[in-house]
Length: 262
View 1 (cartoon, rainbow, N blue to C red):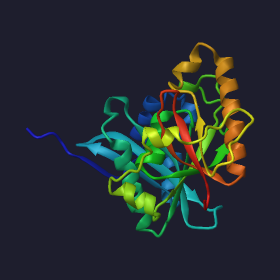
View 2 (cartoon, rainbow, N blue to C red; view 1 turned 135 degrees about the vertical axis):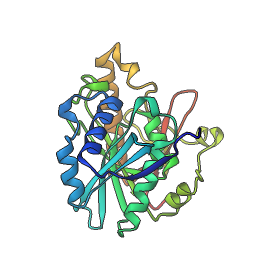
View 3 (cartoon, rainbow, N blue to C red; view 1 turned 180 degrees about the vertical axis):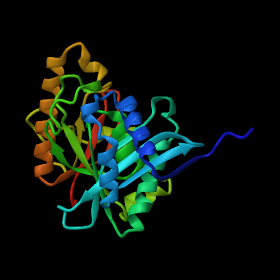
Protein backbone atom coordinates (compact mmCIF):
# COMPACT_ATOMS: atom_id res chain seq x y z
CA UNK A 1 0.00 0.00 0.00
CA UNK A 2 1.29 3.45 -0.87
CA UNK A 3 2.19 5.73 2.02
CA UNK A 4 0.01 8.85 2.30
CA UNK A 5 1.48 11.87 0.57
CA UNK A 6 2.34 14.91 2.68
CA UNK A 7 0.23 17.88 1.71
CA UNK A 8 0.09 21.41 3.10
CA UNK A 9 -3.14 23.30 3.61
CA UNK A 10 -4.68 25.85 5.95
CA UNK A 11 -6.10 24.55 9.22
CA UNK A 12 -9.87 24.22 9.18
CA UNK A 13 -11.21 23.21 12.58
CA UNK A 14 -10.69 23.93 16.29
CA UNK A 15 -9.47 20.34 16.66
CA UNK A 16 -6.70 20.96 14.12
CA UNK A 17 -5.62 24.12 15.93
CA UNK A 18 -5.52 22.15 19.18
CA UNK A 19 -3.35 19.52 17.48
CA UNK A 20 -1.01 22.28 16.28
CA UNK A 21 -0.64 23.60 19.82
CA UNK A 22 0.37 20.13 21.01
CA UNK A 23 2.85 19.80 18.15
CA UNK A 24 4.50 23.07 19.23
CA UNK A 25 4.88 21.88 22.81
CA UNK A 26 6.41 18.60 21.64
CA UNK A 27 8.81 20.29 19.20
CA UNK A 28 10.08 23.05 21.48
CA UNK A 29 9.59 21.67 24.97
CA UNK A 30 7.76 24.83 26.01
CA UNK A 31 5.31 24.99 28.92
CA UNK A 32 1.69 25.84 28.17
CA UNK A 33 2.33 29.51 28.96
CA UNK A 34 4.74 29.91 26.00
CA UNK A 35 2.55 28.31 23.29
CA UNK A 36 -0.39 30.25 21.82
CA UNK A 37 -3.62 28.52 22.85
CA UNK A 38 -5.90 27.38 20.01
CA UNK A 39 -8.42 30.25 20.47
CA UNK A 40 -5.61 32.80 20.02
CA UNK A 41 -4.37 31.12 16.84
CA UNK A 42 -7.92 30.86 15.51
CA UNK A 43 -8.54 34.55 16.21
CA UNK A 44 -5.27 35.67 14.62
CA UNK A 45 -5.97 33.57 11.54
CA UNK A 46 -9.52 34.90 11.26
CA UNK A 47 -8.16 38.47 11.53
CA UNK A 48 -5.87 38.23 8.52
CA UNK A 49 -3.13 35.89 9.65
CA UNK A 50 -2.46 32.40 8.38
CA UNK A 51 -2.03 28.97 9.91
CA UNK A 52 -1.18 26.03 7.68
CA UNK A 53 -0.29 22.45 8.49
CA UNK A 54 1.64 19.65 6.83
CA UNK A 55 -0.60 16.57 6.83
CA UNK A 56 0.15 12.95 6.15
CA UNK A 57 -3.25 11.42 5.77
CA UNK A 58 -5.18 12.95 8.65
CA UNK A 59 -2.13 13.33 10.89
CA UNK A 60 -0.73 16.83 11.46
CA UNK A 61 3.07 16.60 11.23
CA UNK A 62 3.87 20.29 11.62
CA UNK A 63 2.49 23.76 11.09
CA UNK A 64 3.35 27.41 10.51
CA UNK A 65 1.42 30.25 12.13
CA UNK A 66 1.63 33.96 11.24
CA UNK A 67 -0.09 37.18 12.28
CA UNK A 68 -0.58 40.43 10.36
CA UNK A 69 2.23 42.99 10.74
CA UNK A 70 1.45 46.67 10.23
CA UNK A 71 4.53 48.62 11.42
CA UNK A 72 6.93 48.20 8.49
CA UNK A 73 5.32 50.50 5.94
CA UNK A 74 4.40 47.67 3.55
CA UNK A 75 2.11 44.65 3.49
CA UNK A 76 3.71 42.07 5.77
CA UNK A 77 3.04 39.22 8.15
CA UNK A 78 5.04 38.05 11.14
CA UNK A 79 5.55 34.28 11.23
CA UNK A 80 5.26 33.69 14.94
CA UNK A 81 5.63 29.92 15.14
CA UNK A 82 6.85 27.01 13.04
CA UNK A 83 6.97 23.55 14.57
CA UNK A 84 7.42 20.01 13.30
CA UNK A 85 6.70 17.04 15.54
CA UNK A 86 9.91 15.36 16.74
CA UNK A 87 9.06 12.10 14.95
CA UNK A 88 8.59 13.95 11.64
CA UNK A 89 11.69 16.14 11.67
CA UNK A 90 14.47 16.01 9.05
CA UNK A 91 11.99 15.33 6.26
CA UNK A 92 12.07 18.82 4.72
CA UNK A 93 8.72 19.80 6.21
CA UNK A 94 9.93 23.20 7.46
CA UNK A 95 10.85 24.20 3.91
CA UNK A 96 7.56 22.82 2.60
CA UNK A 97 5.60 24.87 5.12
CA UNK A 98 7.55 28.06 4.45
CA UNK A 99 7.19 27.75 0.68
CA UNK A 100 3.45 27.32 1.13
CA UNK A 101 3.49 30.44 3.29
CA UNK A 102 5.32 32.32 0.52
CA UNK A 103 2.70 31.36 -2.08
CA UNK A 104 -0.10 32.25 0.34
CA UNK A 105 1.42 35.72 0.83
CA UNK A 106 2.14 36.39 -2.83
CA UNK A 107 -1.46 35.49 -3.66
CA UNK A 108 -2.51 38.31 -1.30
CA UNK A 109 0.10 40.84 -2.48
CA UNK A 110 2.12 40.49 0.70
CA UNK A 111 5.80 40.84 -0.12
CA UNK A 112 7.50 40.51 3.27
CA UNK A 113 7.48 37.90 6.02
CA UNK A 114 9.40 38.40 9.26
CA UNK A 115 10.12 36.01 12.10
CA UNK A 116 12.51 35.63 15.00
CA UNK A 117 14.88 32.79 15.82
CA UNK A 118 17.71 32.04 18.20
CA UNK A 119 20.93 33.10 16.43
CA UNK A 120 22.89 30.29 18.09
CA UNK A 121 20.75 27.54 16.53
CA UNK A 122 22.83 26.57 13.49
CA UNK A 123 20.16 24.37 11.96
CA UNK A 124 17.62 27.21 11.99
CA UNK A 125 20.19 29.69 10.71
CA UNK A 126 20.91 27.46 7.72
CA UNK A 127 17.21 27.01 7.01
CA UNK A 128 16.46 30.72 7.20
CA UNK A 129 19.44 32.22 5.39
CA UNK A 130 20.77 29.47 3.13
CA UNK A 131 17.73 27.42 2.19
CA UNK A 132 15.08 30.17 2.21
CA UNK A 133 17.16 33.21 1.23
CA UNK A 134 16.10 35.45 4.13
CA UNK A 135 18.38 38.11 5.62
CA UNK A 136 18.76 39.39 9.18
CA UNK A 137 19.02 43.14 9.87
CA UNK A 138 17.83 43.21 13.50
CA UNK A 139 19.02 41.85 16.87
CA UNK A 140 16.47 41.66 19.70
CA UNK A 141 18.05 41.09 23.15
CA UNK A 142 16.12 38.84 25.55
CA UNK A 143 13.06 39.34 23.35
CA UNK A 144 10.64 37.05 25.20
CA UNK A 145 12.26 37.08 28.64
CA UNK A 146 12.78 33.67 30.24
CA UNK A 147 11.06 30.99 28.16
CA UNK A 148 12.33 27.76 29.75
CA UNK A 149 12.10 24.59 27.68
CA UNK A 150 15.32 23.89 25.79
CA UNK A 151 16.58 27.38 26.72
CA UNK A 152 16.61 26.90 30.49
CA UNK A 153 17.72 30.16 32.13
CA UNK A 154 19.44 31.61 29.05
CA UNK A 155 18.20 34.99 27.81
CA UNK A 156 15.92 34.68 24.79
CA UNK A 157 18.04 36.74 22.37
CA UNK A 158 16.67 36.67 18.85
CA UNK A 159 17.60 37.55 15.29
CA UNK A 160 14.73 38.94 13.23
CA UNK A 161 14.70 37.42 9.75
CA UNK A 162 13.29 39.40 6.84
CA UNK A 163 12.06 37.24 3.96
CA UNK A 164 11.68 39.50 0.94
CA UNK A 165 9.47 37.22 -1.09
CA UNK A 166 10.17 38.65 -4.54
CA UNK A 167 13.90 39.27 -4.13
CA UNK A 168 16.23 37.41 -6.52
CA UNK A 169 17.76 35.47 -3.61
CA UNK A 170 14.38 34.24 -2.38
CA UNK A 171 13.17 33.40 -5.89
CA UNK A 172 16.31 31.30 -6.44
CA UNK A 173 15.83 29.61 -3.09
CA UNK A 174 12.20 28.80 -3.92
CA UNK A 175 13.47 26.97 -7.01
CA UNK A 176 15.80 24.94 -4.82
CA UNK A 177 18.92 26.89 -5.79
CA UNK A 178 21.16 27.96 -2.92
CA UNK A 179 24.36 29.98 -3.03
CA UNK A 180 26.75 29.13 -0.24
CA UNK A 181 30.31 30.25 0.38
CA UNK A 182 32.97 27.65 -0.22
CA UNK A 183 35.36 26.95 2.66
CA UNK A 184 38.04 28.84 0.71
CA UNK A 185 35.82 31.90 0.27
CA UNK A 186 34.87 31.85 3.95
CA UNK A 187 38.52 31.56 5.01
CA UNK A 188 39.33 34.71 3.05
CA UNK A 189 36.84 36.87 4.98
CA UNK A 190 37.94 38.87 8.04
CA UNK A 191 36.57 37.72 11.38
CA UNK A 192 34.89 40.06 13.88
CA UNK A 193 36.60 39.76 17.26
CA UNK A 194 35.60 41.16 20.63
CA UNK A 195 35.59 44.94 20.49
CA UNK A 196 37.08 45.11 16.98
CA UNK A 197 35.48 45.07 13.55
CA UNK A 198 37.56 44.74 10.38
CA UNK A 199 37.21 47.57 7.86
CA UNK A 200 35.52 45.40 5.26
CA UNK A 201 32.06 45.36 3.63
CA UNK A 202 31.83 41.60 4.26
CA UNK A 203 32.78 39.92 7.55
CA UNK A 204 32.34 36.75 9.56
CA UNK A 205 30.71 36.84 13.00
CA UNK A 206 31.41 33.55 14.86
CA UNK A 207 29.01 31.93 17.33
CA UNK A 208 29.21 28.81 19.52
CA UNK A 209 28.28 25.44 18.04
CA UNK A 210 26.10 22.74 19.61
CA UNK A 211 23.50 25.00 21.17
CA UNK A 212 21.92 24.50 23.67
CA UNK A 213 23.95 21.50 24.84
CA UNK A 214 27.18 23.48 25.04
CA UNK A 215 25.71 25.76 27.74
CA UNK A 216 24.05 23.23 30.02
CA UNK A 217 27.18 22.53 32.07
CA UNK A 218 28.13 26.19 32.46
CA UNK A 219 25.12 28.55 32.19
CA UNK A 220 27.21 31.56 33.27
CA UNK A 221 29.61 31.03 30.36
CA UNK A 222 26.64 30.63 28.05
CA UNK A 223 25.10 33.91 29.13
CA UNK A 224 28.46 35.70 28.77
CA UNK A 225 28.89 34.28 25.26
CA UNK A 226 25.41 35.44 24.24
CA UNK A 227 26.07 38.93 25.57
CA UNK A 228 29.36 39.23 23.67
CA UNK A 229 27.74 38.01 20.49
CA UNK A 230 24.73 40.29 20.98
CA UNK A 231 26.86 43.40 21.43
CA UNK A 232 28.83 42.63 18.27
CA UNK A 233 25.72 41.83 16.20
CA UNK A 234 23.84 44.94 17.36
CA UNK A 235 26.84 47.17 16.52
CA UNK A 236 27.14 45.67 13.03
CA UNK A 237 23.43 46.03 12.30
CA UNK A 238 23.55 49.66 13.49
CA UNK A 239 26.32 50.27 10.93
CA UNK A 240 24.16 48.98 8.08
CA UNK A 241 25.22 45.35 7.95
CA UNK A 242 22.84 42.42 7.64
CA UNK A 243 23.40 38.68 8.00
CA UNK A 244 23.06 37.04 4.58
CA UNK A 245 24.38 33.52 5.13
CA UNK A 246 26.03 31.16 7.59
CA UNK A 247 29.12 29.00 7.15
CA UNK A 248 30.53 26.02 9.01
CA UNK A 249 34.28 26.14 9.63
CA UNK A 250 36.79 24.04 11.54
CA UNK A 251 36.89 26.89 14.09
CA UNK A 252 33.11 26.80 14.47
CA UNK A 253 30.10 28.30 12.66
CA UNK A 254 29.90 31.96 11.69
CA UNK A 255 27.43 34.35 10.14
CA UNK A 256 28.32 36.11 6.92
CA UNK A 257 27.39 39.79 7.23
CA UNK A 258 27.38 42.29 4.38
CA UNK A 259 26.98 46.04 4.46
CA UNK A 260 23.69 46.88 2.76
CA UNK A 261 24.30 48.29 -0.71
CA UNK A 262 27.96 47.24 -0.72
